[in-house]
Length: 69
Image (cartoon, rainbow, N blue to C red; front, side, top):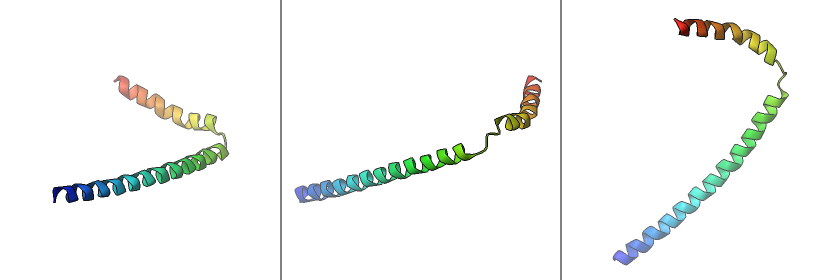
């Protein structure tokens, strides 16, 4: 009886490990595609670094001032 249960558990474990491996591969594939899409979207954005810095600069200065108190 023990040997039968052990064989059953081993078979189930093998199937489970196979499914997990397949899911990992699919996740990695989707992750890569998603990352590429995100990078392309970011590269296509207008370059407004200076404008963004001008908006952030006052907030950063205020945070520094409050932190020093």
